[in-house]
Image 1: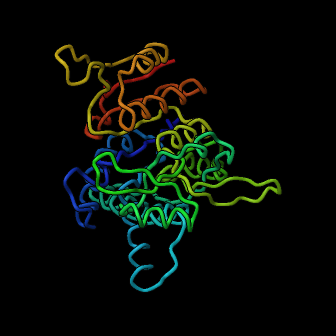
Image 2 (image 1 turned 90 degrees about the horizontal axis):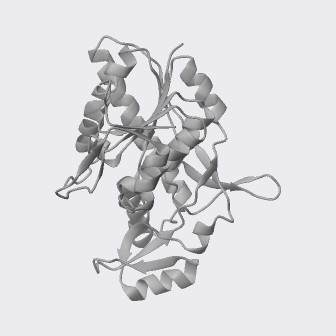
Image 3 (image 1 turned 45 degrees about the horizontal axis):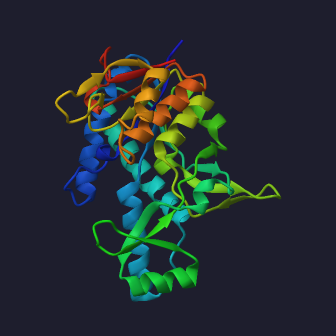
Length: 313
């Protein structure tokens, strides 16, 4: 039986540090990352790809803001902006992966799905929004926007201005996961839950409604991996392994660890919030909910039998 794997692309798969984010830069980065999927495809893996959208969704919000200020165009909410970036990034991944497969004489269908992800409207994260989105504002303008729209702003730690913050709730359901599994097990490569998914909630009448939030893409990809009963869950990042005592004289590479072992390292503060800690949590979630192997590594390591840090039950 073929292996089904979910692969979550990290931010550097789309945009590298120091780059402006031009289409040429992003397409080249995606092309290089997709090259590293070839060994898995040649080994018969069925693949589902998730991805981040942090810089891109921020840029889209800036574009909406500029359009509003210059032309009076209506600004759109965060969930709408996430949907925009799901489509644009999915297009780039699909296009570049098709180019890579053609170079290797391979042919597969690739399907990009614009995907809603359900959260709990009563999630504690909505009481304390912390995820920065969009542009920086002077204090006076931030106060005015907060009053007009009910938004919450925090001052940037680097004193670049005030920035809107939204909640980052846990994903609880992915409405079209059965379609994702069916497509993937039929041999199609599926790109989905981009940017953590379009945030939405179910109201008391059963209606699905978008909400201003940003969902962690690794947690969303992990949830999807469990739902479709994936054999493996990969998170691609910019280092080949997870380390404890990172960048210290006694730095140690983690190769094969149990959930209990890596959970202790997480509790001890070994992993940075906003960097490795969310990735570790997503892998723990996958394994604790029935997944087999969760692997954190960089794209260049894919296909190697001893790639990355493997988290086991």
